[in-house]
Amino acid sequence: MDKRDAVSRSPGRILVVDDEPEVVTILTKYFADEGYVVDAAAHGGDALIAVSQYRPDVVVLDILMEGLDGVQVLERIRALDPAIRVIMISGSTDPELKPTAMAMGAFAYVSKPVALVQLHQAVAAALGRPDPLRPPGG
Image (cartoon, rainbow, N blue to C red; front, top):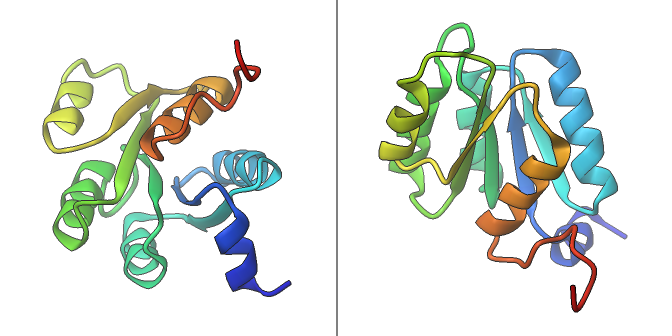
């Protein structure tokens, strides 16, 4: 099966952007195991290149990164393709980050440490899918 077949059969394409390698590894593995096509970037510049190359359905984007921070990357993603859903993640306790990100067009905001179930539900909602973790008919 080539990569195009994998993309057409997956529930969606996700770009994970975080400057913490262990977070990227955990999220990439989790979503790949769930059947998503997953790309990763370690900083904002790489994220913007990946967005323009792969046009992911959903971007999981850390806010606090060196160089371009997540808010700057969100702004540029919105300009490149407003249809891409962006889920912001952050370990910051700054009470202004969430409302700022949401006002700029983020689809959701998930606090770190990230609960994989909560993040998966946000990704599924961003893709317009029913809750992936609820049993059928439940």
